[in-house]
Amino acid sequence: MAYPTLKVTYFDSPGRAEFVRLALFVANIPFEDERLTGEQFGARKQSLPFKQLPTLTVNGEVHCQSHAMARYAGSLGGLYPASDPLASYRIDEVLDADKDVVNALIAALFHPDATQKPALIKDLVENKLPVMLPCIEARLNSTGKYFLGDKLTIADIALYLMWKTLASGHWEGIPSTIMDGYPRWKAIAQAVEAHPRIQEWNAKHPAH
Image 1 (cartoon, rainbow, N blue to C red):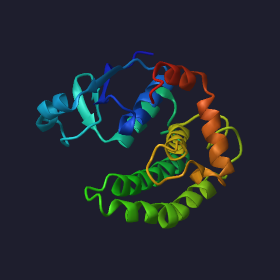
Image 2 (spheres, rainbow, N blue to C red; image 1 turned 120 degrees about the vertical axis):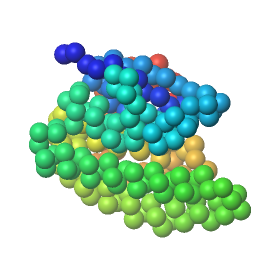
Image 3 (tube, rainbow, N blue to C red; image 1 turned 180 degrees about the vertical axis):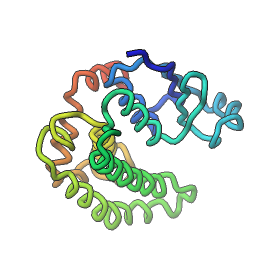
Image 4 (cartoon, rainbow, N blue to C red; image 1 turned 30 degrees about the horizontal axis):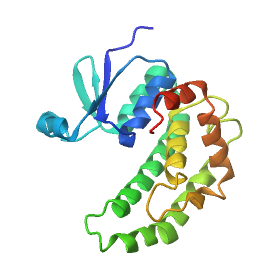
């Protein structure tokens, strides 16, 4: 299959671009992995559609919004069943829930007022995440290796990345045990992590 010429542009970190990078890499779709410094981003910022990263350049045309980018990548690579409205709806539901968690994390962990951060992180860990995470676990009620059975989708990649983030122990005030008690989510994350292409990516990017 002939793919369009693709370039993912972000900083030299996983962040919001890792979802798109993995969706393309797992599907064996060639892409340029462009990683900018803060200075390079500053010089380019005003030319970007939403003045932010990541971007996905498709045949020279720049596009934005990481989940839209991942859906496009998934459609190209067979990881997003656009021809099955209900299956794609279920994937979108997981992606939107994932985005809610990400936004909650950012609001607490990157709050500009350092004096408020401890209270915000405490509220996140004790009140917000204990409501949000069980809701996601409850929606992972299908059988099989992955979220929708035995075929990997972009929902599984999103679930894996969120699991990896929350269980890492790298974030101030968030215990590495916070994902204990979500067995289905854990099983999906472990299945994704064991995927040969994910292992290959992680071996090439050990700092991630």
